[in-house]
Length: 162
Image (cartoon, rainbow, N blue to C red):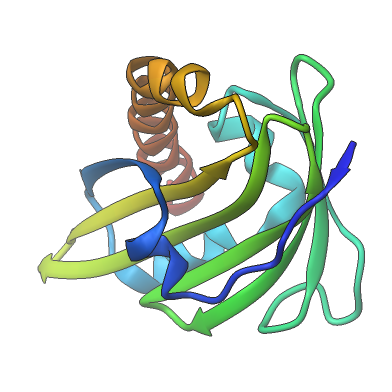
């Protein structure tokens, strides 16, 4: 595991590489936010995750930290850098696989109308030296996984409302 260069929220727009996906979720921003804040249950709707575990008290909010383990075993340590309930949160990577030097992931939640909310997940990275082509080549797969996760988020929110 490598130590990352922590970044601020602006990095989500200025990073050398960014992956993004958006979806309309049939719910309110507050209902979506509730699911996003339930860290331990993320693997239920984001299939690429094995576990998500808060590592700070409180578990949510700016400065809070968590550990994320992907299904393949890769582990990330993250710290939240934005928390604007129920519209936006973002975290920066603190530690993770050596392929990346810096990481910011941001979720925005924008109400379109009653029971219709657009959710956008953006992953911004600075590849490690010599890994830029590999990271860029992963674009299609990463964006497909993000789109699949947002469909899973829609199902998870609907299941809570049932």
